[in-house]
Length: 340
Ligand SMILES: Cc1ncc(C[n+]2csc(CCOP(=O)(O)OP(=O)(O)O)c2C)c(N)n1
Ligand code: SF4
Image 1: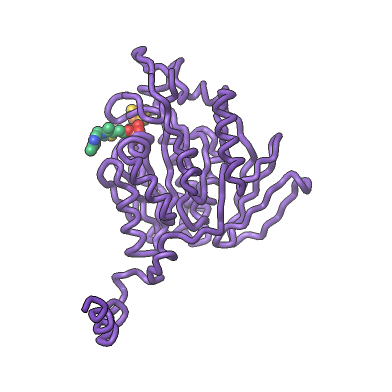
Image 2 (image 1 turned 180 degrees about the vertical axis):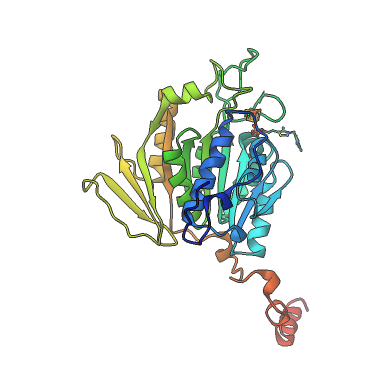
């Protein structure tokens, strides 16, 4: 048992949850470990964390980390609406949504799009295995055209790419990664939490039971052979001094809303994550070349988040008194006169 305490005085074990009931080797279990690590290292206080999800093996994962945090396991595909409501009720909560590719790109696609459109402050993790794991292996909407099911059926439909959809809608933070790449996933989760707005991380997360065979493009071996990272990602939280020891010109340093920094060290071509067209190009070119492009694809730190746009009070709504919640008699009279 590790006894090293983080900056809020908690040991790593305080970030653990119930024992997993998912299949051994499921990519979702690795993502749980990455989330535990990121939250512990950031020193997130459990009472400030709200773990939100829908339905699916992926949507079960909030049970497996930070047991003492808030959590709501909602209806299939409805995590964004629940999260939007919870964010408005208490802006001080750190919203962490966990969803699947079925939960997001099939039944929940409308909710996903409207959360992005409103820029609700939420880290939205898609545990993307290209299949409906919980209901025994049907193709999901992110399954690639021509990919083959375990029993031989071929997918005849075009995939929906959640990152491309998010960028098209003007999402303020879009990243892709792989469950087996903790070195990349952990800093991306930290940066997403430090970001104010909807932060989508599409994490390819193989389903070992239904979608990890030859012919699948969401299997461990396919991703291992086709992953192409656009930059090495590191994250420096606001409470640590930024110290960069790379050659000038090889590193891109972006300051996030809370003063934290995300450092992107270029690998090959330099990708500018503030360029929306370049982000779409990188995705399209990767797809055409049969590569899985991973890393921070797009980031906009200038856009106001939903609660700010809507002038939601900083304090939780439950703590507001009558004086703050009710209009004065004069305001009420003025309001009523508008309908006269
Ligand atoms: C309204 C509704 N329709 C269908 C279902 C059945 N169902 C449960 S989970 C699921 C898909 C899960 O897939 P995904 O979100 O990719 O998660 P995974 O299990 O693969 O992690 C479906 C269709 C449901 N629970 N509710
Ligand atoms: S069925 Fe697939 S997605 Fe569900 S727990 Fe098992 S390996 Fe994971």
